[in-house]
Image (cartoon, rainbow, N blue to C red; front, side, top):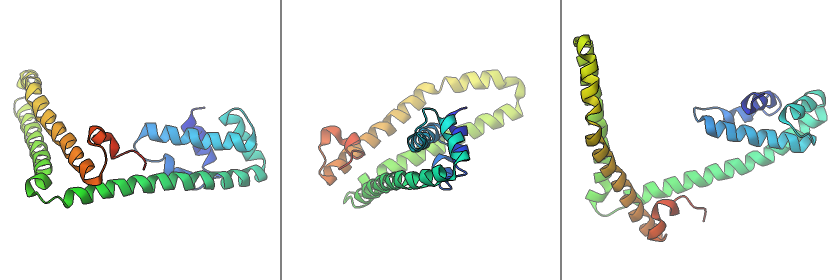
Length: 187
């Protein structure tokens, strides 16, 4: 059985587990499923997730012990989530507090411009393919030829994000050499 299936089996004993393994991020869901299985294996003393699930299903005392153990683990998950949200919030406040209007607005403006251009391009391509289906192969080939242009635009956007990260790090007192990473390191 895969980890997600085992974790969903454990969810009947751990009501809050679905909150953690639900969502679109499959790798995060798999990692959290492995954590839940690890807690179940620790509680039951079994060496596999399937065996731990079977033991919990057959023994109400183990189910209660699993719930208690998961609550302690969930508390740590919640603390980490809260820490991450606090860092994101601090980053957003630092950007909003910048005294330079150009610094505050350039990156979002450029990002929106790239998004609007991308949307217009894709809408035009879709319309052209619908209007002239026989020309679809040449339209798609022409679209592939725009890759260098999009590479430059996205490269500029990436550099602006990194530079803004340096500015935020400087404002928060983090070392500038690690600026993009310093924003995500625990303090």
